[in-house]
Amino acid sequence: MKQIDPYEFDFLGGKNNGYLFTVQRGTTYEVKFKPSGYLFDSAQPFVDSVFEMVLLPINPDVDKEKSLDARILPTVVAIIRDFFIQKEKVLLYVCENKDGKGPLPNRKFDQWFRLYNLDNHFKFDFVITNGQERYLNSVIGRIDNPYKTEITVACFELAEDNSK
Image 1 (tube, rainbow, N blue to C red):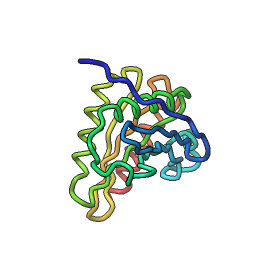
Image 2 (tube, one colour):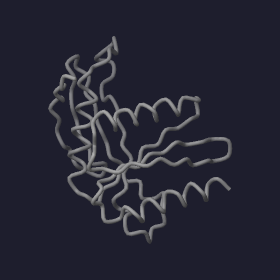
Image 3 (tube, helix red, strand yellow):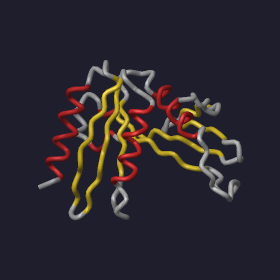
Image 4 (cartoon, rainbow, N blue to C red):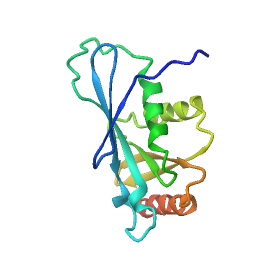
């Protein structure tokens, strides 16, 4: 398979660890890594290292055709790799299921993880139930993350507590 080059991106930093990149058709995207440690007991040693990724077009009206750009995914993967330079960081991916499409983005996320062979990372999935709503979640972190065991246990405890 031919390697597709990512777009150049800029690290903005800030509270949401933001990154920016602009695609060929002119749309600029922001990738944010929002702190998400609030989901866990504040006494956990890893709460300041849990982030949820958000990808948003900044100027969506620029590209009216919304054509699929094959360089967006490699760019997001390059940004994720940059984000994981610090081994303690953990990425939480939440697929809401309000429209019944939750499994689709979750499957797409799994495909991307396998396609880009993040072999020095761990990944696991868990489900949180809130009433009738089910949220499919994935966690990715570096294999050498010192809190890997604590994070895994806390996520499955969170899932179990919310299923009652």
